[in-house]
Length: 110
Image (tube, rainbow, N blue to C red):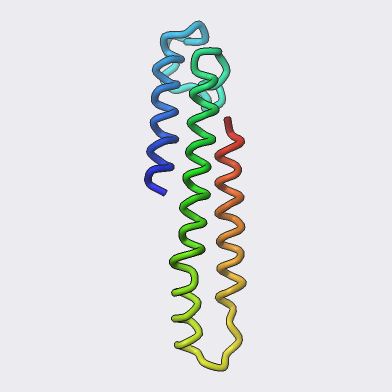
């Protein structure tokens, strides 16, 4: 997750630097709308690749969470409340779904 955030922030920084030296720059405007950074040709490819890579890293982090951490969480919940119906699985499924949905949102931002 921290690598995904670093990639997205680096993408925004690089695109902002290119935007300030490009034809769309408005003197006095400190930070444009985020979508403005991916409009012109030089930074468009960087914007698209950076956000796609950031979203992919986010999704990979969620898959690792699902494979490594989630089973341990479910085991701990089952051991602490034997015989009780578990709501943790439904919560975990929801968490994983919305995590992947947010990663897809970052990927299609570009």
